[in-house]
Image (tube, rainbow, N blue to C red):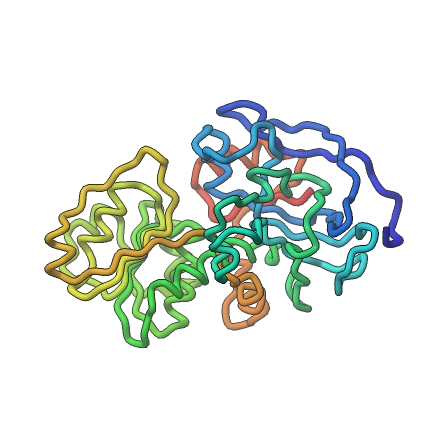
Length: 341
């Protein structure tokens, strides 16, 4: 094990103990295995997936798991006989997706579609804690000049990078983004940087303002205003995860357009779509799931001074203030809620 300060055996953590609540607990840390690094968590973001886990809506989530899959932290120790370019003290961002490396998808360069996936903060203990053990392959060194708080945005941004890739935006495209939460606003930023004219729809004035004034949206609309929109769009990104928004996304695409469903719907949700309309308008409907080799690209974007990604973080709390952070997160009054253990 690499030299470090005295190792802790317990960690304060936010855990899904039962449906409907996330509780602060003290939990014994397992020993660091070969191939793992112990990360002293510096920042961990709350995500809609955490809310789905809390409500029991994520079928593969492990009961009593410590949540937190958007995290950064400092390498605190390195497992015995672990080969890595990291050293103790390095700031890293963590890709939570752990693949089996044995299924047909892993063996054909599509590990994000792994048939037996694990995920830090979902199936194994995550980063809403003071310390977490992660596979060394999941730890990405953060570029110089990127703060720990901004580095915690790497995982959601990596998912957005993949989603925007799926949209095949070209310069001059007219794009609409449904939802201006953190994922939707990141989508706005990347679509604008790709040369698109972007419209964004969200019920919250504060979120619409951030999307326009900080991240470059050309037009902002409330959902009511969007019902009367006459324009159709080359690319439509649905970043809400609600059936009505997913159906609306299909209706808003112009003939030959592309729809990308980015939001996470409930497993039982269904959408009514006319196959004839999809056929007649030659629509492409795509979905975007986790990230596809895009963590390093996300970190490079975070290090790019052209976009002030720190403006996505609206609230910061200590881990001891988790109950307050969770309430603000559920209220949807802010953007990204960052917890600093």
